[in-house]
Amino acid sequence: MNNDYQDFIKKVYKKTGIDLSCYKEAQMKRRLTSLYEKKGFKNFQQFFDAMEMDQTVLNEFLDRMTINVSEFYRNGKRWEVLKNKIIPQLLAKSKRLKVWSAACSTGEEPYTIAMVLSHFMPLSQIKILATDIDENVIKRAKIGIYPERSLAEVPEDIKRKFFTKEGLFYKVNDEVKRTVTFKKHNLLADPFESNFDLIVCRNVLIYFTEDAKEILYKKFSAALKPGGILFVGSTEQIFNPHLYGLKSEDTFFYLKI
Image (cartoon, rainbow, N blue to C red; front, side, top):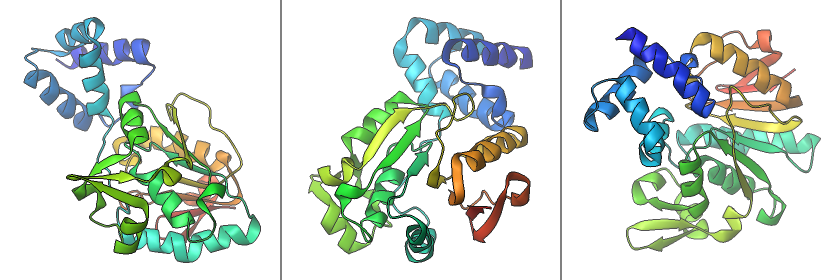
């Protein structure tokens, strides 16, 4: 059975450039096994054959392996720190901020960043790069329509200002959408741009192995300008930030030394 999964890892890498061996095996295997069983396949070999034949199955695989749990202002207290402490600190050094939302999923995160930045500058001056490995979620992010539960943590004034209610859903206003450029990007395989003031990568690193995390911390650090900030998720504390040229600036915020 394990060989079946190892073969699957190799074939998926060849087909998609996604290296499943960088993800925690037990978690990923469990997630994918439940998907293929639900679809009536007996093993990873049958699952892969189906992915070869049918784009829909491949898309479902991508959706399942990229963990699309996202909402606006997720863990609201951290966004308060970003607004009240981190951004003023960054703007003291540079009037225009280069910002990246890495592994942005369905777009809640980069749009939240734009809304936070709008306290400091007009939306027309905000530019955010948002990337994800999964083209399906990028398509959904570009549409910018969300169920009410995605907005549970959004402050009322922000909800009124930047969203339009359409039936049971909320649509992000176009001027917010225009601040974000979405691109497909594989964190482990693709090169990173550089000179970022702020990189936000939250609730993604927990799914990677320790080795893969180390590689990513180094790449993120190299992509930041000195004094730039890496903002990670609430279960993703970096225990030896100095190994990557970073130091803790606040809980879950790391400054490039």
